[in-house]
Length: 269
Ligand code: KIV
Image: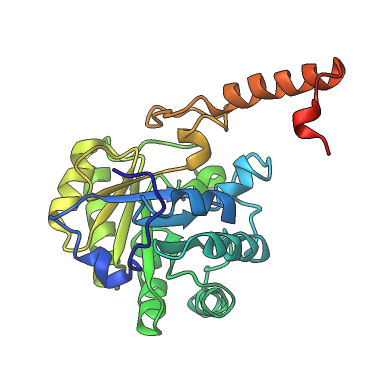
């Protein structure tokens, strides 16, 4: 594949729906214009995930993320990337009622160029998803391990280990599809359960820690490129040792400055 920046056609909700059983969907997170522009010509979708509250804000979980914070980062991502389908991650507490969910989702559409919003939760959120989709909002449903439930669940727990839980996940996924979600994102689910869900749905699934049987995959960019080193779940493949490279390069710069070796004439006027 050429690494020259290419002008691609905009990927829309209807384009993505056609990927099912044809082509795997590639999604990555991004939180700013710089990285969004680096990712844009190779990925199908960009998620402005509330994971930014951990990797970039330095908090222990995603729960303190706010609408203002997410809007700011989504505007930046939309400035950097035009062709991928961009998904806004609704922060904790912003969609507890259908009225709040719609009010906040409308704000997303009015203030940013995001194409869709993502909400965490299974069947219990069905009415909210239906209300959103009935009112012209494209919804990605996020089920399985849901980071916004980390405090109420007492940790991040892999789902689908028992037959009962596998059935609950299947019901949740079907309910989300029936409520109008155009993608069901499956996080931290036993691979065989995620594969069965993917086969049962007509909308695409996107997995994170849910095995290769999903219709697409998403990873958090700072995890996969080795910049966020405090957190290394089993499902993260590190494609780069980013933190190590930065520290080594920084050490060279520090040494150059301390020893008055930078700037040389080459870098001076
Ligand atoms: O916030 C996020 O980045 C996410 C992914 C883990 C799917 O929700």
